[in-house]
Image (cartoon, rainbow, N blue to C red; front, side, top):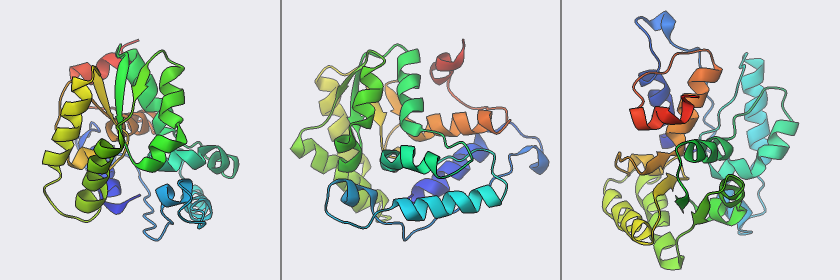
Length: 230
């Protein structure tokens, strides 16, 4: 959720798993239910169409297919994590908690959150970061419009060109004194640069997925890996 993020996530896991032959890679089952109701619209009260039933159905499908652990490459979907995990017997990784823990382990103290309006409003990152001693700054209305445009008008729409808008938003947040920028939407890595101050929630989820599934991670930067040295 959405399809572009899912494709990118699968490639990330494949590229970042140590393997010398096909059989060394992880066994992965993917479901990409494109008609899942919009998570942000539901959280913001713009729609009464609850995404949870679709998400539960997909988790049940994955469980029947033999999944030992489930990863949902959508930050906004973590709003439903408590109800989702209560309805399935397979562990579901929490991308928000994993990302906040990653930021804390790397010593960041003032994080900028770039995400959908739904994720921002949910307060999930605010709570996860604050509980770890990290201040969480969110964009003002004008800057949020830039982030939304990158997500919906460019990445989800399959259009190139979102990089300039992302750079503008990131520059403003860094100018406000943030020491890191959290990509709190799994579409944003498709428009964001690689930089030491960027914490990519999708990359964090990929790392945790590889480890939890018994694989050996490779290709992660030394800065990224400092979070897992102890």
